[in-house]
Structure formats: C-alpha cells, structure tokens
Length: 264
Image (cartoon, rainbow, N blue to C red):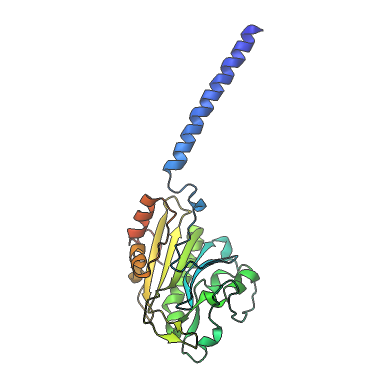
C-alpha cells in the first residue's frame, strides 16, 4: 500500500511539473506572437477635442470647430456584409454630441453631398445599424463627383477586403485644418482631403494600409493614394493606434507597402 501511495505521489508530481513547463511555454508563445489576442487591444485613436462618442456600431471624435467628426472608427467583418431590406431614413442630429452636431439643413443648396464616413453600405446587416449611419455626426461635405467616384470605389474595396480577410478595423475622416471653406449657417467645414486607414488583425501577419485622397474627381487607381499612417498623423495631430505595442505600431504606421493587399 505504501509503495502504491508513493507511486501516486510521484505521478502527481510529474504531472504538476509537466503542466508548469507547458503553461510557461504556452504563455511565452502567446506573448511572442503579435497576431494572437491583438483583437483585445483598444484600437480607438486619440481625440484632439476630448469628445469621443460611442454608438452601438461605430465610435467617433466630434470636432465642434469644424462641425463634423475628425474620425469615425468601426469594425467591419465578413459576417456584417450580409444585407437585409432597409428603408433610407432622414438624417438627424446626434443626441450624444454635447455641443450639438450640425443640422442637415446646412447642406441645402450648398452643392455638396452628405458624405458618410461610416458608410451606410457597411451597415446593412440590421436596420438599427443602418439607421445609425444617418446621424449628422457621421457625415462630411463631399462633392457628388468625389462621393460617387473615387471615395465610393475605396468603400467598395474595403468591403472586398472584409470579405477576403474576414475582419478589419477602419478609421476614416476628413483632414480638418484652419481656413477651410464652409457651408451653411453653422459653418460646416469642407475638407480638402479625406483619409481612410484599414487594419487587418485577423490574419497571420497583422497589416495596415492608409489612403489620403484629395477632395476632387479622380480616375486614378486607388493604390496611387496609398500613404503612411505616420503622414496622416502628422497632418491631423491624431495618434491612430496608441494602444498597440510600440514595435508593431511603428512598423505598421511607417509602412507604405500595399503589395500584401489584394487590388483587383
């Protein structure tokens, strides 16, 4: 009996030692793999205004001076690309913006479209998600030629990438700088450039791509507008991925490589 107890004790000890080394190895593997658990990071950019608004299907930083969001951020997954019948609603002011978002009437007879930042086309998987994109905090003045042209092509490309890569994080907005043209009684600024940053964090290798597009009609290929996140940070004063580990963040933000993204 004593021998049997001794054997049980030895076996238990061996299991404990084995588990200890396995657990330590698993922990090291997780820490060393940049792509593991990266979805747990907070991807929100910094806000230059301190007015970050969280909606159910996207977040934004509102800039009262320019009467629009300096950025809108949201996740876009392959599953969200499904589409149900939706009725286009009227635009309405965002009740969560404490300084009041601009009224849609500022766009009347202005010559500019109400350009979505988080596209309505990305949120057709539910009525609530779709309707949420029609808050005026989610729009910026865009010419018809730009909105229906190169900007629309980029939005469609992002949906293509969401289908291909399964899960993306998107940050987009107009570049808000002093002395911009304005429209309406509330002086809604008309950006001269728009940007879009896409982070793919579901693949084996985390990657990002950034676009900076002049606010005008263009037939150029989208790849010709690729720039670094660092450049967009420089002109906007926004830090886009402050919670990502520094080495990876620096690598992503200085890159202008688009060869690892599929351009059809």
